Image (cartoon, rainbow over all chains, first blue to last red; front, side, top):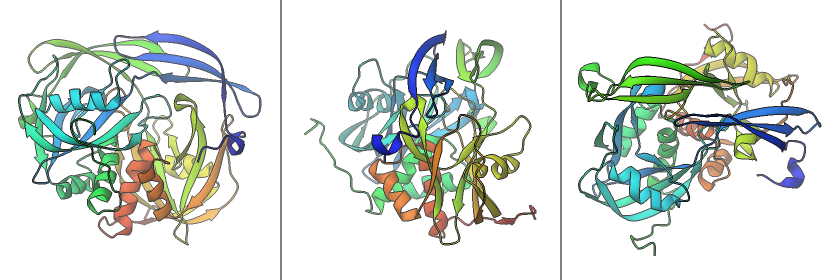
Length: 197
Length: 197
């Protein structure tokens, strides 16, 4: 869909950058761009290292979910396991490491489903979506300051929660679209074993 | 899912707030919270007024989409029309005003589908999801500095684009989950006429 010849009337060119804020956690950049009509504008957004989100399926077909307090929205959210990439880390390496560690599960097989951009208005974050199956429950390894419940639900229950407003987390809603279409056979995944083969 | 008695071991209590950054567009707050174990932590996040996103259906069953440059992710994105709330504005009032204005369409009927939180790790943004039908094409009213293409696609085409990686915008992926389940009859919407009745 993004063909340069066709998109010239839409494309903005970066002509400058400031970094007006670097907090403990968030980093804001402010780019100056040349608009398609030659004008100038500024674009402020969050710089983010990227993340992974896991649709983990147990052998009896249930999905691994978490309940976790999310301070920005002031509530406990039902969501799929997710985690930020370390600098230079490949998404699959991160997927194997962080999000499942905090649930206690390890997976035998992985399949890449796609990528989503959660917040294109003001963040460069991407979330790489991985399905995992052949799960084994081991010991949970929570980072300091992490408090979360892990539980299982059927895909039908998760879909109901998405449609009735129980689940409002964007990445979980998006991943449930993939899950529904994987389970119906409309979207076929390319599963790979633990060795990456 | 969010029952206070059950969530006590997850809940963080805000005990302080700073506002370390207010840019042209982004506003960052830094809250100090008391963790479930009594410890302290800081939570930095973006304060956002909220937004609406529209699944607009034409009388022949097509969906209104946009192609727009999104500077934070450096590409032209295929997405559903969306717009930020003005201060104090009700979501339906915003839905009627901004996102469809920029496409040139007005709608006879509206139905609320749900809400999504696009970025629960570092933003308080919510996006209210509205379906619209009975569309009439009028004159487009773009804000200054807005450059976008408007086009129509069938729901089947949109779903294919979501599943093949053409669409990566989180709100559009999430709304396509609702669209698929509305069209299948699994999720029934409560349509209201132009008067709000």
